[in-house]
Length: 129
Image 1 (cartoon, rainbow, N blue to C red):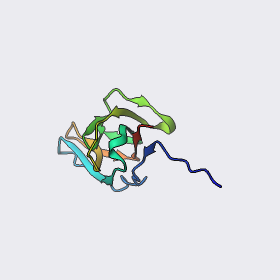
Image 2: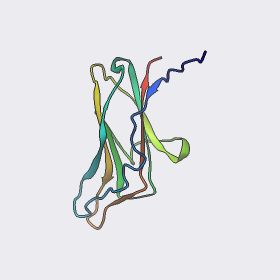
Image 3: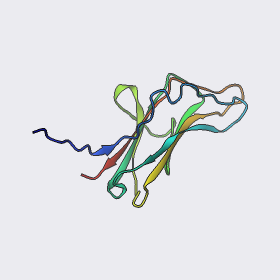
Image 4: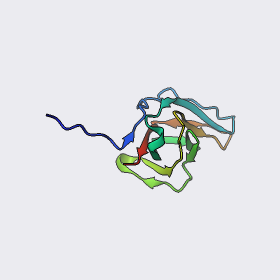
């Protein structure tokens, strides 16, 4: 008989190549996100926090991501995480929230150019044990 392991988190399946065709407009001074999808959250009443991690090779000017009602960016007080990722862990109160949207992209602050290369995002929805 095999033991069943129940993970203490849910990880939305964000494709590793989600930013492969990402483009942003160097003349537009704004956050220029793409949608990384809508995700149904299993057991939303048990969600205690969200871990948002990202890495990239090059960016102009900085990176931002929104997971439902949490927005964070490259200039927040971030943690160094495994495998070259940086990110945050935020406590949440998502009781009654069954679906979330995730979007991310470059924030352009100068009109000369805008780009984001080699970006990768991971999100973990952490549960009470």
